Length: 187
Image (tube, one colour):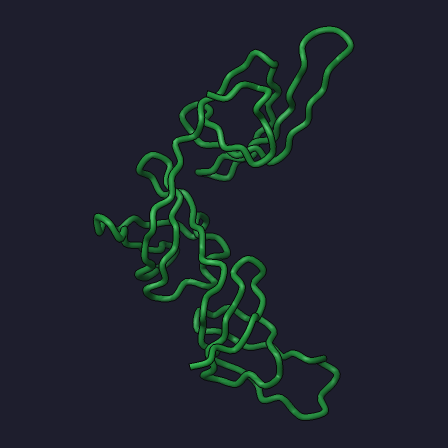
């Protein structure tokens, strides 16, 4: 159990049997009376944002969250299928739950799936993934208008800027936190 004095940005709590994360937090102590904790909370299942004010005597349950190592299998329409590496169950996440991670998902990639109880609600990618360049325009020597980078399309359909020496079929490492090129993979 958490008390109101434990509240801080990023804390995950359970309200009305649903997990919430605190995205903004303000403490105020009026001249008279109890201290107030004003929080902006985001529902971790549907993304809805609510504002709540709590008193110092309020208590909260810790959200029943855990991560499981799973392997990405495939996507169909707006659904992404994963396989639990321990019990081989295959949970399906929606496009909203996967979010920008879909730009880096390739067959067989191991990820951490965030579970609330037994329900999958989010995904955590490894910091770096290796992806193949599917389409890259040739770079003309002396083309300094575009700077020292050019756009390429990766095997997942994600477009990013890379150095001019990257060609089609090259495997590159991408930082999943920033979406930027890191290095060419040496094979």
